[in-house]
Amino acid sequence: MREKIISLLKKQISEDVMPVVSVAENKVFGHYTTNIAFRLGKLRGKNPRDVVEDLAKEIKKEKLFERVEVAGGGFLNFWISQKTLAKELTEILNKKDLYGKKKLPKGKKKKIQIEFISANPTGPLTLANGRGGFLGDAIANVLESAGHNVEREYYVNDAGNQVRTFGLSLIACAGIIPFEENFYKGEYVKEWAEKNVKTVKKLKDDPEKLGATAAKDFLKLIKIAVEKKAGIKFDRYTSEKLDVHDKKYIEKTLKLFSELGVSYEQDGALWLRTTDYGDDKDRVLITSEKTPTYFLADAGHYLETKKRGFDGKILILGPDHYGYVSRIQAAAKIVGLENSDVIITQAVRLLSGGKEAKMSKRKGVFVTFGELVEDVSADAARFFFLMISPDTHMDFDIDLAKERSLKNPVFYAQYAHVRALSIIKKARVKKGKIDLSLLDTKEDINLILKLSEFPEILEDSSSDYAIHRITRYILELSKTFHNFYEVERVSGVSDELARARLELVSASAIVIKNALDVLGVGSPKKM
RNA sequence: GGCUCCGUAGUUCAAUGGAUAGAACGGAAGUUUCCUAAACUUUAAAUGCAGGUUCGAUUCCUGCCGGGGCUACCA
Image (tube, rainbow, N blue to C red; front, side, top):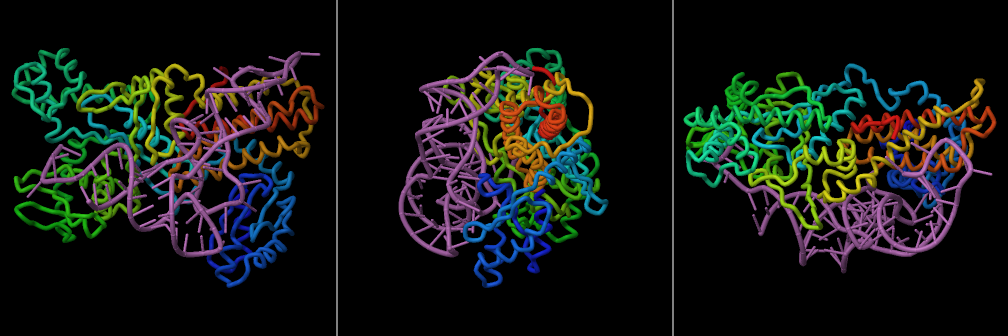
C-alpha cells in the first residue's frame, strides 16, 4: 500500500527525493500521510502549501483512494478506498504464508552471515546471551523474508589461552594447584570438576586438553539450551581452532595485511593500522612476546567468512564489547567484507525480589538463559526480549516473568490467533459467492488496514534490524483483531456478510501467524 | 578523564525531524442470554534541566545533572 503511494508520488516529482509515506497514527489525518511537500517546498523555493495543492490535484485522479486531502501547512493525507483494501485482502488470502515475503532477483540477492551468541563454552549462557540470541535469530528470519541468503553462525572460541585458563581452573577446583585471580569461579566449574575427577587428575599436566574436553561438554549444554529449549537455530558452529587456526587463516590474514601495507612493526610488536578506519588507536596483532592476540584471530575469522563468499556480515555482541566495534569494523573493511554491521545489545539487568541480582559469568550465574526459558517458556522469553529495542538497557523482573507469565503480552497475541481459528472452525455458513465489498464498517476497514501494514513493517525491519517494531506491530494487530471481534460478528449475520467476514478472519490468522513466525514465536491452535 | 548507550505516565517500554507523544501492567469506573472474558469500553497520568539548528525537536547539535557499559602488547 505504502509502496503504491510512493510510486504515485514519484511520478509527480522531478527532484531526486524519496517521498516518505507513513501510516497516520491518528485516523483523523487519513490512513497514510506524507510530508513530501515540506521538502519539495524547500528545494523549489516555494510555499509547501502550493506544492501540495499541485500534487493533490494529480493524485486525486487515482482510483486507489477514497479521499485525498491537503492539511496543515502542507501534509497530504490519503484515505484508501474499500475496493483497494479488498484487493489487498485477496492478496493475503492467495499468498498465505508467503504474504509479506519478497523474492529478489539474482543481482540483488545477498549472501549474509549473521553471527550471534558465540559465548565461550566455559559455562552456561547468560541472559544477555539470550537477548542477542533471540535478536540474531529474528534478524536472520527477517533477512530471509526479504529474500536474502542467510547463514546463522555460532563462533566457538575453542583455541588459545582461554581454554588453558579454563583447564587450570578445573585443576584448581580439584585442589591440585592453588587458585589464581583470573580463574573461572562459577559453581558450574566446581560441579564439572567434581563430576569428572578422574579426567581432571588424568589431564592435570595438560590443562589445554582438559579445558577443551570440558568445553566440549559445555558446548553440548549450550546447544541444548539454545536449540532445544529456546528454539534458536544455527546453520554452522564455526570452530576457531578447526576453521580458523588449522586452516591457516592467521597466516593468510597476516600475509594479506602485509601485502596491503596496513600492518607495521613497532616496539617489537606487530600492529594493524585501524586508525585509518575510524578507530581511536592502532591495535596489536602480535605482541612483543610473539603471541598472537585475540583480535588477530577475529580478523582471521572475518577473512574466513569473506573467503566463503559472503557479501556481508552482521555481528551481534553484548555491551562488554563496545570498545571492540571500531577495530572489528576496520578489520572487516580491510579483508574486503563490504556490508559489515555490528549490533550491540545493551545490558539485561536482572531484578529479583525488587533487588538487582548481579550477573557475572566468571563469578557465577544466578539465573542462566536455559533456566529462564524453562521458567517462563521459550515463547514468552523470546517475545519479551524482542519487544524492546536492543539499544535500551532492559530490566528483566524475574519474579514477574515467572509468577505472572499469564500477563505476558505474548499470550495476548497468541490468543488472537487462537480466536481467529476458533471462529473459522465454528462457523456454519453456506457456500457461495464471496463479496469482499461488504466489509465496510469501521472495524472491518481498520483490521484490513492493519493487516496490510505487515509487508511494510517487515521491509523496514530488514533494513534497520529494528525487530521490536514487528513485536509491537503484532500487539497492535492483535488489539485491532480483538476489537473487531467484540464489535462485529461472523455468525448470526447474513450468509453473504458471514462469508466475507470469514475471509477477513482467515486473513487475520494468516498475518498473525506470519508475523509470529518471523519472531520465532509459536502460533498455537488452542489455548 | 576519554568513548558510548540511556533518561518519556506510579512501573516496564514505544514513537524513519511531523499534526493531538503511544501501549502494557498497576489505579478508577463499566461490559457476558451471542463465534474462547486469556477479551472489550471509558478514565486519570509523562518527554531530567538550559540553550541552539528548523516552517516543526522526544528525536539532530552544545553544555549541565543523573544512571549503565567500555577504556590492556587480556582472552
